[in-house]
Length: 63
Picture 1 (cartoon, one colour):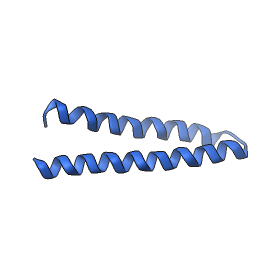
Picture 2 (tube, helix red, strand yellow):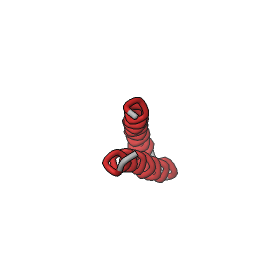
Picture 3 (tube, one colour):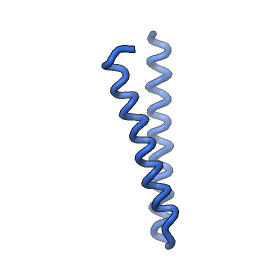
Picture 4 (cartoon, helix red, strand yellow):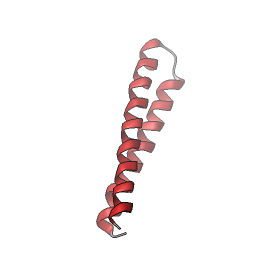
């Protein structure tokens, strides 16, 4: 893979890890508001995972 394809995939994977870490921290805190915020972050993580998988699949099919 060339550099122009590695960078977007790396950014997508990094965003998954960052949102996962923030979501786990929110989940560990007590309170109803934190649980709701954690749920939103986990949904955002699933979206970023989908985006990363689609990017990798597209790159795999192109090459």
